[in-house]
Amino acid sequence: MFSGIQPETGDNQWRRLLDKFVKANQPELAALFWGLWLENGDTQGTIGIDLQPQPHFVYCPKEAVKNLNERVGNRLQELLGIIENNKPETEVLMIGIGKGEIKLIQFAPEPSPQVCFEQVGKDVDSLLESLEERIIEQIIF
Image (cartoon, rainbow, N blue to C red; front, top):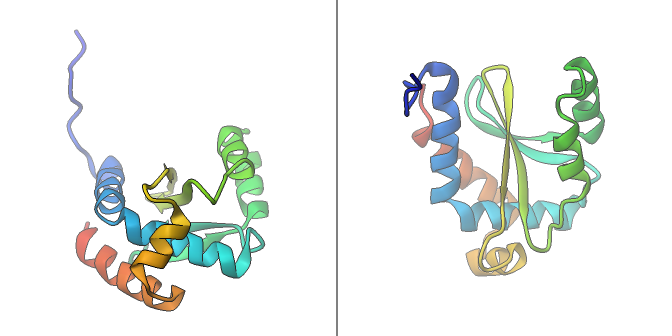
């Protein structure tokens, strides 16, 4: 028979912890996303949260994601489509990177990313610093 809940392994624990972090920090993540969008548009790629060796923010250049897609037999084609069609005015898009795997982080914050940025009232560097401090505290393996 099928079991309802799979036991949590180290391989999927990072996903659960990342989901929990994103849920708890949506306004600040939306503000960061919008601030980086204002600074760079999509010229640097998609913002990512790399969990190794210690959680930190990175850019995932579109070309690197395309190359990875080719190396994994086009299994990331859907991800590429989502990146290509992202609407930064209404939705936040990030890539979680952990344990040799990636995870899409996508949500439509209320209020919009722009309003979150205005309400949080911090510059991008301050947001990066405070979010990295929080993620290091909250995601421990």
